[in-house]
Length: 159
Image 1 (tube, rainbow, N blue to C red):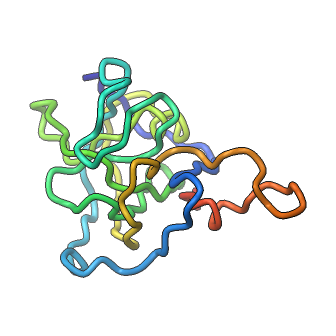
Image 2 (cartoon, one colour; image 1 turned 90 degrees about the horizontal axis):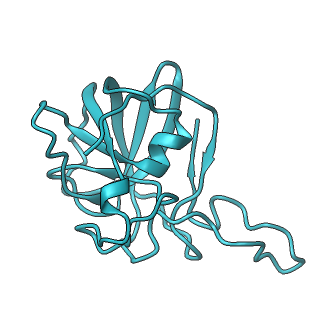
């Protein structure tokens, strides 16, 4: 498992495939708010394997692993003045350094992650868990051939 940090880049990281998740407040963990935590990332050794939530991990999957939050929980991750909202896709981290969060390589790349760091996190909603949660939005799918908006494609947005 590689460890790297959240640097920032204002990026649009699409997640969720074709279906638009409804960002609703999670019920079981509504009061659970993390103000800070240690973040690492995982990826290359796990490509092609299923996450605990049922997604096939690839370099383009955007998401985060957490030991206790339900699959599909949307978490706003903040570091160095930048933020990105990502779904919980897996369990972990298991790095033995006390990390609370494990970003997928796609999320780490979208945020220019380079080392293990302390991040800010906030639960902002819940998306339906599916095998396509965390995948980039597909090619144009609008009625006139225009790209689907990130919200309609289930995208997680940097903010």
